[in-house]
Image (cartoon, rainbow over all chains, first blue to last red; front, side, top):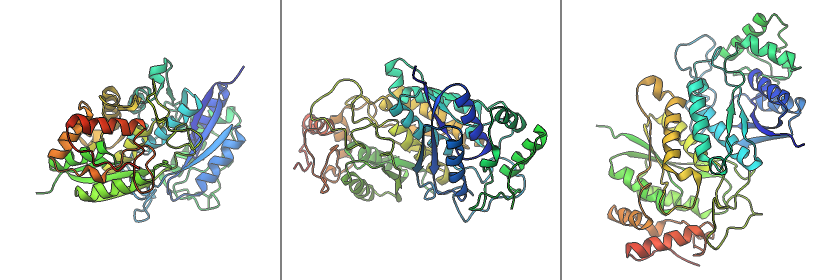
Length: 224
Length: 224
């Protein structure tokens, strides 16, 4: 019996790595995809590949995509600093339409592979105020995706799977640990150094740190 | 008084060039975007830039995006031939999720620019059986786009503008000519040579040819 295929978006961070572990636990043959989009944090691409391999990805693809030329985010524009304190509203680390772009490329690959499930580790609880992490956004994306591709005309349905969307960071950590995820392989920091060591100060580091604390487990993050 | 901004997807072909002319005629300051996605037809990138400049694009951007590594289409995979006769169903020249990927990157740029209008030259009449050219797809995309970005939270609305969607190819030609479009600058062929000369045989060439015929005007296409 052949396994059902899924495409899983992986960034090398805590959330997407957990989403991959969940997809594997549901029996999917997982095809993982990362994006080299001119992000500051090159270490995340290495972490993504490492974590994908550790969790049995069938094929890991890195797509080159120059979002730097569009700019508009602290993550892709060197002129905008990553804030080291909490901010209000949509933060400057928001990359315009990033999840939409990433999901769309994953959608193309899913269509080529014949995969009906796309996993993304978005989270609407301990999230950073990004519009493209909300459940109603995901629902609208899924509807659009089924009209965008052959799926609709061939009588099967694409699903955008967001297993973390209602979980707190602590619950995500606990879920991942129960599935054997080694979070020491992951990097979440918005400004990790080339060796993958975290700043401990940015929004992403703060959320991650609290997650381990509230889960009552040791934080394996390497801080610099 | 500052002009309203629009992002316009341009491929160098007849349809998208006409869509750009229409956007200009509505008074938009147009920011044009093309994609270097590993397509066979390199001449289209040159045509897109030429046509964008001729129609007064404020800024023309070419985004590098490697869709070749995903494959699945005659336009991006050298192992699949471009058919030189009419086919049934979704044709092999369909690039999986292409319009979704292109619109999503345009959406990111629109958000950075503060543009609320994105023009795309899709057409549901003389079209090639691509699922991502249908009106219900565009409507679903627009709904998703408003949830994906800051727009929803800031009280303005993004529009995906498809001025050609209900027009025949002949009507598109007539509309463009009435706005002064020089179709000699455009390239539609799926397998144009490096000099931009068309094969005259592929689906795209056939539709274009019939368009000029039915419009009763001279076809300025350079065939090889």
